[in-house]
Length: 142
Image (cartoon, rainbow, N blue to C red; front, side, top):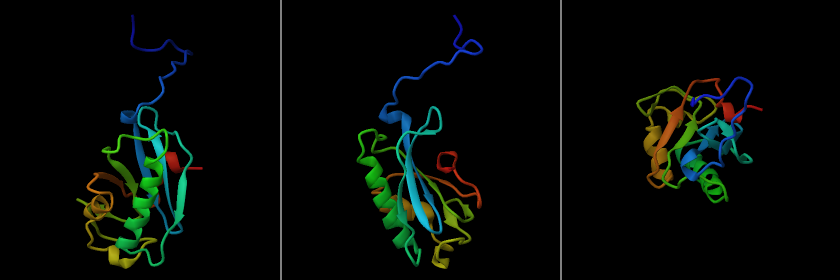
């Protein structure tokens, strides 16, 4: 028996478990949005949650909003493992966790350790960062 579906046959996945899910957060110039993604499919499995981007969008202010977004999503019935990483889409050039530019956020981000700021805001939870300027994670496209 093959592990692959026959052409034209759709195999339904079982309902996701917390280990199948991850929170993704998109930091934008006007809003910080988050959702819960099924890692098996890349599909959003929850309504997005949005809070306006703070003005000025300093590291401390943005980190606080990211924490609030993550807390809201983590409190939902269908939520990832609380120890799972959080994916963050950040509008800047980031190398080895260090921010080298600032687009749509305050210039005080430059030379800031994004990974450290977010990990501290999220209680030590790890984060994964997507930083291609102008890109949007698949789950956030409308």
